[in-house]
Image 1: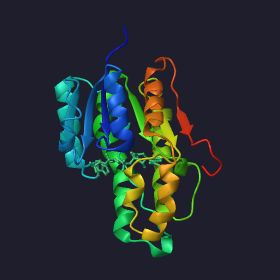
Image 2: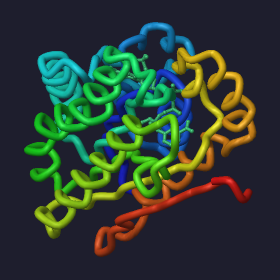
Image 3: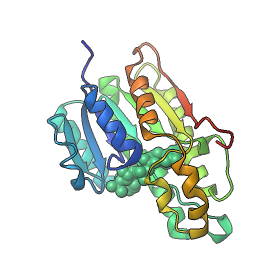
Image 4: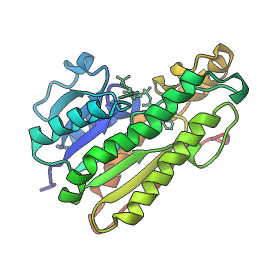
Length: 237
Ligand SMILES: NC(=O)c1ccc[n+]([C@@H]2O[C@H](COP(=O)([O-])OP(=O)(O)OC[C@H]3O[C@@H](n4cnc5c(N)ncnc54)[C@H](OP(=O)(O)O)[C@@H]3O)[C@@H](O)[C@H]2O)c1
């Protein structure tokens, strides 16, 4: 019989996070779903194996409270999926400082906040950290310099823990290309939003990323899938 794990996933109220939480529950795992707007999910995640925990990953105290609550409810944390994140596209010369800060605070500091709180639990359980980076952690695109820099940071943090904690925790970095979620709707530059909307709408289904996350979790504990890049099968990434 497959082992039932307790999996904490951030950014679980939408897109990749929500789809992944559903797949993990269907696979028989216990899932703590962390997000700011979690209450609207109570009907969709009405399962004894699903716990909805409000959390703003930018706020260390909020992360501490949420992860403590998840740990106390289940007595272990076996997997942490750092998925919460956002991308706002604009030229650097036109950039809005609050949007830059929001990306850095969410995508980089948010990952660090969650790691800092969850690592002792994950070391104790010989657990698994899955960080959602992006193809933007492998390429730099115009109009997304700040977003790319946050995802390069995620990839660097991820690889560094993998090297430092080999034998203790498994660490997987997953880098999706464009995925069809609400992600692009954060972009406030209306011309760019118009340009990019169709590109993301024709991107991957979030279920493909969810399946890759489950595959990384299911891989034998003697091995780690350290990196996965999943792109739409088209020429322009
Ligand atoms: N879509 C793509 O093309 C794509 C490609 C590569 C990588 N990614 C990455 O995949 C991840 C998920 O994105 P998505 O496409 O699923 O986007 P999405 O549909 O917009 O979902 C983003 C999730 O992040 C959560 N979130 C944002 N800020 C948060 C905060 N401060 N605290 C807690 N949760 C927060 C949101 O929940 P609340 O607003 O309820 O808090 C939401 O659940 C992100 O890290 C993104 O960078 C996406």
